[in-house]
Image 1 (cartoon, rainbow, N blue to C red):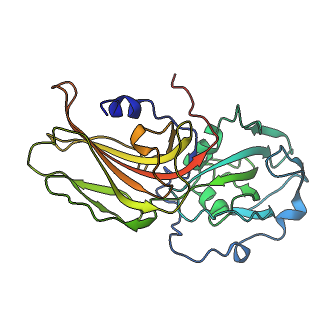
Image 2 (cartoon, helix red, strand yellow):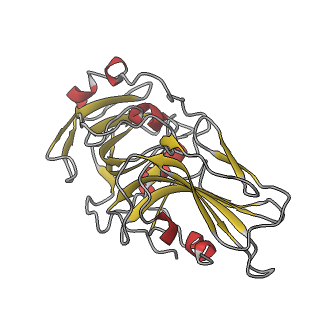
Image 3 (cartoon, rainbow, N blue to C red):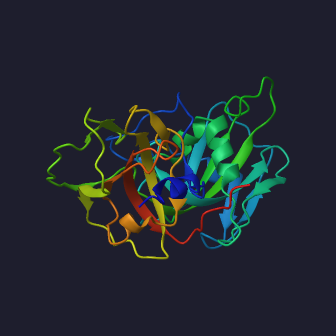
Amino acid sequence: MRKTSAALATLSLAVLALTGCSSAPSFDGAACDRTANASAGLADSVSTSGDVGSEPDVEVYGPVKAKSTKFSDAVVGDGPAIVNTNQPFIANVTTYDGTTGEKLQTTGYDASTTQPHDIAYWSQVSPALSQVLQCATGGSRVVGLLTSKDMGAQSDAGTVVIVFDIGQVFLPKAEGTPQFNDARGLPTVVRAPDGTPGVIIPDSAAPKEAVVQTLIKGDGPKVKEGDFVVVNHTVLNWDDKSVAGTSWGTTSLVTSPLPEMVGATVGSQLMIVTPGADESSPAQVLVVDILGITTAAPQQQQ
């Protein structure tokens, strides 16, 4: 169990989430109707072909101009919808100069080498991407048109065409059945509407033995050894109640499961309390939401 802190230190980004966009529109709980906001004319300016998940053949009939963000769905998938700005998903993306049609960047469309940083970069620069991707479903190919204003340009820098192939879409937070636990002497967890946990640590001493509790039991598949799991987590130091680390409000993470996660189901929320070994290794509380299982391996930290 004392491996918990070391394992947390190795958590690394391999999944993209729409985060860092404080001005991005909220669509939590709203009906997902993309057809009402889609641009029918965009398909006349940008054509795509090829299977979703493989690099598409894209023809941009430039110059493509727009005064506001536009999008259209070239292919509509039947997977889960992206319904939260913090919801993680995996996608491949290629961008094109809207004026010349020149390809600018691509993720490579190879699961073994996919680097989703370009997508994360665009989501941080442009809140407009939330408009392009909100309510899009797994398995879809989405064509978006971003203006120079969307990209934060101070002058008319033209437009950018961005083509998303959306793969796996994961849960935005733990979703399942709340579980009864005898919390005597243990922390209490409360949750914001978006799932962000708040942990109330009692003034009593930390337990002398490790404790694992299932706070929410999801109904998804079970985590197995060797899986890569997509999680959100918060870890706190017991003695001073300080937050030692959190992924909430930043980006969801993908990691090899801690031993305590093996056998838990997707959608579950676990609380793991580890006793302190000494002053340099204090007692800690870890609250983790298991959002999904993926084939994307964690990237190595540099």
